[in-house]
Image (cartoon, rainbow, N blue to C red):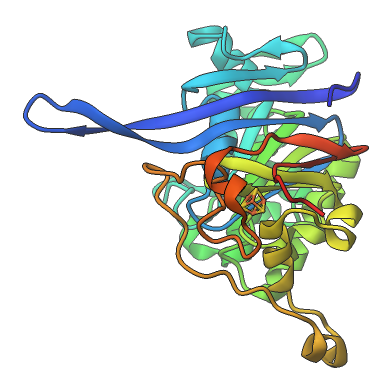
Length: 334
Ligand code: SF4
């Protein structure tokens, strides 16, 4: 899986949240939100990360950025281990890795003007120059905010307005401008279009693609269904119950999905051809996603898998490369 152009390398990453009970708050279990995830993100690509709500995809993004402390595993960014970084050195590294949040309404401070919101990372970290970061004057920050507003398609004259004066799509553009303020090389986009109207979603995706081309950005693009990541992703990883179950390039995934869970997700994506849509076979998954505090023995998908066999209930499948660049965790992949 390694590559000379790998920007982010995630190995066996785990994030378990302890469950505590009783007067002494003893740990009685753990919610295994992320449970042994491994993948690489190549410089300049968009890796889509897809799965149902609660499968651990957002926690994966946050743990990669060290916004959550990993329970186990490694994250390397630009060949440097993030686990070893603490305090100031971690904060400095974070300048290169930013996040765009799902809910533009909740992620912007309603008491700050959009100029203050976008300038805030520069107040904390300074401005990027060719030789590193340095403290910026108020004028320099203002100039940069004007530049960023133009870049994301907002009128710089709005600099003194408050978030509530903007539409959902405009607020997401403000979030994108804030994420770009420090000129990062890697951005985790955590369901950035899920809360937007369908008509606005394409505009935001197009903006993200334009910015990627212009600045050579690398994205981890998190979404809860495969139709949302199809357009923007170069490769796609599918997550189920804290684990990546399939990972391959976009075309292989849509033409040749091998994991039963991916096949079920694909069968739920609408096809814009009424004849094909009417005749195609749908895979309806029975039951609910098991609790990540008590995942099933063997394969974590065995309780809902339509083709599960005895071995699936006994032995956990390994995540293996079954074709060049196509990784699957299933005993019976086809
Ligand atoms: Fe289904 Fe078994 Fe494959 Fe798991 S290992 S996805 S239960 S067939």
